[in-house]
Image (cartoon, rainbow, N blue to C red; front, side, top):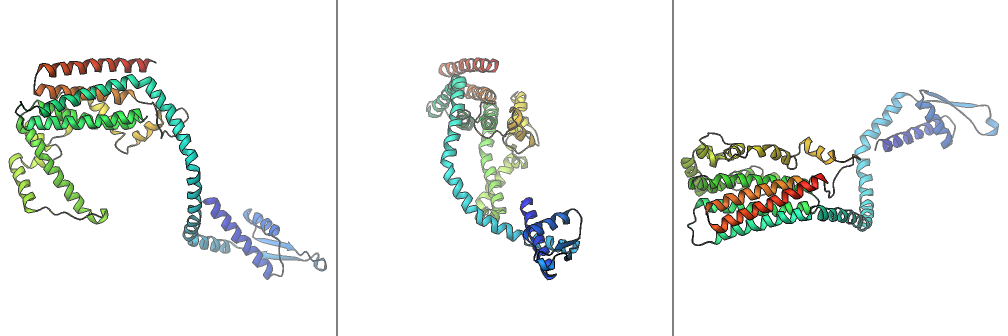
Length: 384
């Protein structure tokens, strides 16, 4: 863009030179104008042009160009620049879009070839470990399904909350598997963050009272209330219809605060009474189930969720070339695979403990066996 503006400025100065020379009775060539422009750049302000007609040989024409005239040209271009840019971009965009569209099929094939090479390596080097993670997922899903469909047990809020949270964890683990198999382990690690949160909630609910589980399930109403308020506040910018809370919603909100206290309005307020704290964070819940050692990998996984500089730097950290890593890669697969396996196995164990039985005990032992094999695969790949 700077080069384009400079060329426009130089062209306008050459026109000024030609106009002044013509007023002085001379018609300089384009070469003469460029020569004068070169001298002007070197600091000269007065120039002489030799006439070319044979009967005028020896006579010269003097012209002068001062800084004000140059400044006027620059100011005029600066004023017109937005319109120039708009016009040029309007002219260029359709042609460029058409050219890129024509080239896209070739580019798509090239990208697909590169992606296939990475996926083959992932399948070859990590296929067995990912299959083991898939089996851990399948056993956990079956365990949750059996407890959900078992009509012989008396279901309460604790069963309901733990089964639902485990079910959602299983769904997210499926996302992690899809991301890792596709060559996006950073995305898988970011999604493990959600698996970890769900696992902590499962363990916390499983080892506490039915009242705690009721508070957890009822907190959905508070979360929905806050979301509706946020949408209503910015409805014009978002193009949505504002939703005002009706009398029933306000009545329910008041009842919840009366039962659980104003702390219930906090993000983790549903756990306040159980932890006997006025302000509860997720780290408090994590600590209560003795899982605070996951805080460090949780922070690392957060890089893939938030826009911090550390997350951006991770894309370049493992690359010798310094090129931006934007496509599929094998870099960093071990972390999401290991962490997801740990979290899901913990969640399944907490779920199974709700309804102790021989079948559930066997299921948990099978999960531990799969995890041991998976861990051995990770160690083997790390040593390779």
